[in-house]
Image 1 (tube, helix red, strand yellow):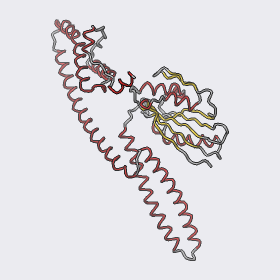
Image 2: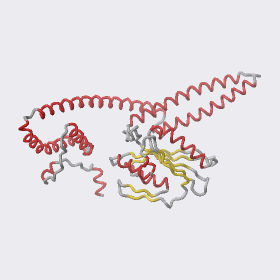
Image 3: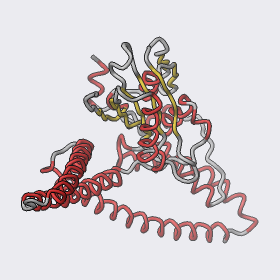
Image 4: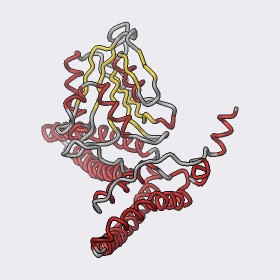
Length: 359
């Protein structure tokens, strides 16, 4: 029997990793990463006995091709430090068959992945010599899919809350079963000549012992995911409460700004609709002429506040939504003069990164 081994980590660009490289290695295949233009070829690697992509109900069928699946993941993650996937490496019992391994993994993937909206890339390795080190490489998508097959947001608060809730449930169950076991042991000691009762109690105690071992293992898994010990749970609870407070403020701010947006929209429409028909063309021409300059000014204000966190793609999407609401024409990109370009904000390289680049 193998010693149990489970290694869990995150595939992150911030750590210099590529999910395409991880998927190619695990599946002993060749995958191309459009994000960095690199091809990862592990077709000469030996020992991959089984390879399959599991999808939740609403995922596009073409994602069964891991190249297409991880391209979709790479394309939705925009930042240079994005977390791309959760990676598990799990030892498999050498006494079991390939079908047994597949059955075990499929149940695990369903309960902890696809039923929750995550996609999973699963591979079984049994490198030479066979039976020496059978194990599975599992890559879960970080984001779940909604019922429309769209990626949902990765919310650290929801993930952390879920892990904490499960930890507390496991800890409470551990406490209950520990007390129950102690009571049964005490009762068994007082059985005297009642051997049949003592035997039944022994069976119950043995079953409870196995349950406790499983709960202890689950608890250690959850603590590993929280990256803390029992003594650190209070700080994790505090972190969740702080997140709740911050999200509450954001939600209130969103409501306030949404209400203001609707008021401003109605006011704009009233002004636009109140222009005399004979003046509409001239007014709209003048407005179209000043819109680009106003947009540049707004970008500069946003950049002054958010610095390197400013994202032009978010700003452009917001503009498209407003233009659609107001039935406005999109501002056409125009070639700017050198002087105009110098006025526009630039996303500067942080000093530390700049020094590394210069070296």
